[in-house]
Length: 199
Image 1 (tube, rainbow, N blue to C red):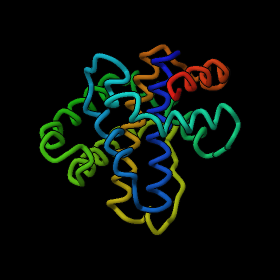
Image 2: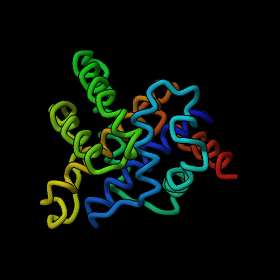
Image 3: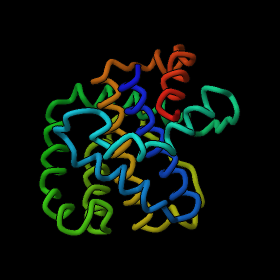
């Protein structure tokens, strides 16, 4: 559960940024970098290495603590989490699409290395990759936000690129043994694991 919850924190952290960008047009730069870096760390030795260490996941772990501890309820966030988990299942069953997405990510890795994974050109390319692949699967992940920002192509590309990072975390969650039912039914065990990481 300890490593599994890190992937879940990465997923929630990315989706919180999706919400923020859709509402305000602006991401938190550090959290955005963590999410986008994870997309390019395909062969990492451990879940924490995918995100550059546990400390980088503190915002996501805090969100999970608040959610499982019922301190604070953001109704949109769990809905998005469930939608991305369902999307991940469809995605991994479509081997041709999975290969296409991986090839698209690899084609941007030099760019990401040179300019940073959250550089506008990289985000635009990853947003297009999401639009051409994952956005055709059902259920679609429907992001609500400020129409002013969601009408801007750069913001839409950023939202899609971060959704790609969220799917990356959902894949890792599954690889670590996590399931939809864990998220829904094993709240106490997940909360204890979150508290262990937060100290």
